[in-house]
Structures are given as C-alpha cells and as structure tokens.
Length: 169
Image (cartoon, rainbow, N blue to C red; front, side):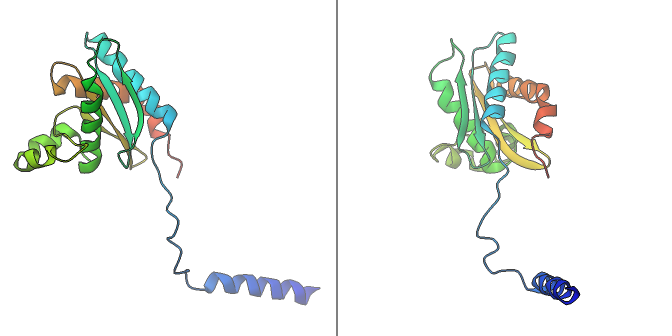
C-alpha cells in the first residue's frame, strides 16, 4: 500500500517537471467588457448628456472593436450612432482617448478617417478594469467632442467601482 502511494506521488511529480506543451497558447483567454456593463455605461452616458441638455448616441465596443451596446437618445440624429461607434473604434485602435490621439497625431488624421469604422474626433473614451483595456465608449451629438467626452467620463465615474471590480485576477 505504501509503495503504491509513493509510486503515485513520484509519477504525478514527474508530470510537473515535463516541459510546457508546444500547444499551450492554442486557447486565448480574453478579458473584455460584458453586455450588461456595456449597456449600463451607454445608458448612463446618455443620461449624463441629457442632464446637460444634449441628445446623443452612445456606443460601447469591446477590446476588439465589436459593438456590445448602442443607444440613441430620442431626439438624437440617426447619424450620431455611426459617429459614436467610429469614435469608440478609434479609441480601441489607439488605446488612448480619441481626443488625446487627435491632438497627438494630427499628421495621420486624414488617412485614418478613410479607414472604414474609424474617425479621428474627440468623444471616445477607453474603459479599463484591473489594468486591462476592456473596451471603449464613443459619444456623438453634443455640441462639441469635449462635451461628448465629458458625458462618457461622468458615466464611467458613476460606474467606476463596478468597472474596477469587473475583472477577477
């Protein structure tokens, strides 16, 4: 009986000494924004703009630029949805807020505006949790990108505790 237990211990410890499989990276674990949080960020963004008297659209994308939530306020133009999505995508592409990217890289702004799904305008804010870039929110419809960005910042601040604890390490 003792010999059997010892053999099992030795056998199991030998597996720990084997080199990592060459296929260890065949599955990627993703940390990205979930639908419920995305929906609530979009809703809070629109509410923040409404409080300031603006009618906007808010689009939340995941870390890959895939739309997770999109809301258009009742009186916002239909075009604001596309612009908000393109601002969010720009933020994901650069991994910095779209306004900061616009200010830092005016040299390539025109070229990037010709890429489908991107627009270099202020109003896209990145969403981070636990040190991870998990998505971005784009806003369009307020009179100026700075006001769009402010609405998104207000929403992210309101949900900051929930966002920060969204990632379990």
